[in-house]
Amino acid sequence: MAATVPEPILEVCGLKKHFPIEKGFFRRVVGHVRAVDDVSFAVQPGETLGLVGESGCGKTTTARVILRALDPTSGRVVFRPKDGAAVDMARLDRRQLKPIRRHIQMIFQDPYASLNPRMPVLDLVAEPLRAHGWKRRDYEARVAELLELVGLDPQYMRRYPHAFSGGQRQRIGIARALALSPSLVIADEPVSALDVSIQAQILNLLEAMQERMGLTYLFIAHDLSVVRYICDRVAVMYLGKLVEVAGTDALFAQPRHPYTSALLAAVPDLDPHRPWLGETLAGEVSEPIGEQAGCAFAPRCTYATVVCREETPPLVNLAPEGAPPHFAACHRALDIQLPCV
Image 1 (spheres, helix red, strand yellow):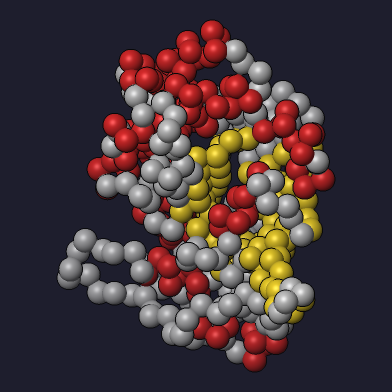
Image 2: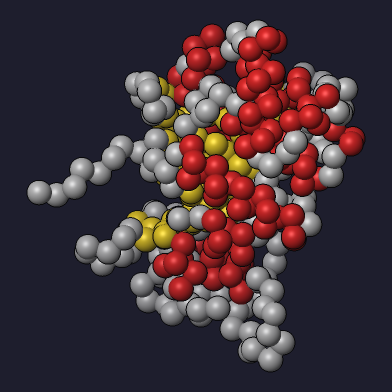
């Protein structure tokens, strides 16, 4: 008897977020920035899905729309908490969102900007608890427990953020995200502002919390070495669209999209004598404004043909039957051999 495949904890279907471009005294809309443009993916319970791409490709905007910090232009965001029914986050109003938010939390990129310097650690970590009705006599013990969980001494809860290092501040941010025992945590480049030695500590902490609490992560990053270490699958974004989604080992071993290959080639190699197998991308990232014909990556792609410039490639599964899915949005994915770097 075949094993039952669990339902995804998060399904993003055709998600779009377009920002209007206004001009003149009457703020007439003359166009739209297509920050997130028809993005679809799913995250399974207990896994870590990495969302990668250059700065400005739409990773953080995607996360904020999933959380409903930003309202979507269109699309669905189906979330299935551990102890509740599936809900479409894109359709809920602010009042309906509150009981759902306890199940989905975020770790922010900058541990210096994400903590209010006027609040002690006790109040910072207890913010989500107070928002959901906890009283001070109840949440002090919970904050002490959370600080111990992330490797900080509970006696520090009376101190203010300026008394902590960057790594310690990020631990405080993680404690705050875990306060309500969420099902899904969105980590928006949680180690990019930290020293390399501290990055390893935070990544190990995230893995330990995942195993201990049964967490699911959507891990946003641009450092592919970090992604390779912590993620089970990787989704690559370019100009608001997904161009490749695959298991981490498969994607690093054999990328199927030229943009993914270029990203991997850009990762520094510690061996100075190893020949460089990648290609330098030509041109600059174009602006995601208005409708664009063809593949968004075509102007910078050395493999592009006429069809690439005229028709938008769909995201299709290129893996053989019975193998784990490997999706790519490239007209030439099957007839070009990309370098393995």
